[in-house]
Length: 64
Image (cartoon, rainbow, N blue to C red):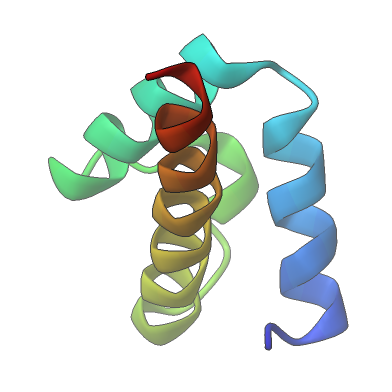
């Protein structure tokens, strides 16, 4: 379970749609953090990345 402030960041990123979220995941993994994550520490960014991956895994399972 994410801290409420991190959950808010995840929700804001997800508002941009699945394609954007996949791009955010790729960018975070490459060390290019979206503006919403730049003020967060590494541990919080990792938690957000894990949450975004988890969310997208659900969508990918549904689309197959």
